[in-house]
Image 1: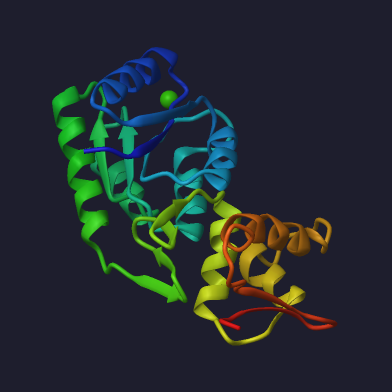
Image 2 (image 1 turned 180 degrees about the vertical axis):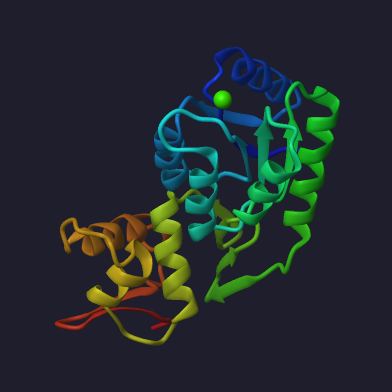
Length: 224
Ligand code: CA
């Protein structure tokens, strides 16, 4: 099984051990020592699963867990040193899917990872389409004319929103709110910048342009 896994664990030895074992199994792995770093990487990458230590310095694993949950239903496995029932229950309350207790058997951890990935992989598959552009939302794959197109997380989110609203003109403000979130405080021209990135990947190499600019209003994804 393959996939990209985010490890957030402050204990170097344990983190390194998980990293090596997971890479040996063929997973791609990013590993961070703090919740802040982990969340930042989460925002900028597409992961398939998160391995999250509960006892982290500063931002706790519980807090990280609920922040990830606000944005995604990616599988989260909590790694905890505490073998007490209340901690486990709390972890699951915060949105974790499963947990392992340290010291854990690596085979058990791998089995739990496989189970979560499988569960997530077969969940309500959804395909969004326009012209010969296809987005498989559960696998996070975008193809045009059969060729897979690599998108960053934001480009993907933007395209997903446009696809779900195809043939509807959406304003910059709407895109900012829906794709970047209410608490985004940066430049508003970020929308135009990302539309440009997206165009260069999904439109420029093809004859039929799908992203249309509606002057003074915003953008629309439609077949001409
Ligand atoms: Ca720890």
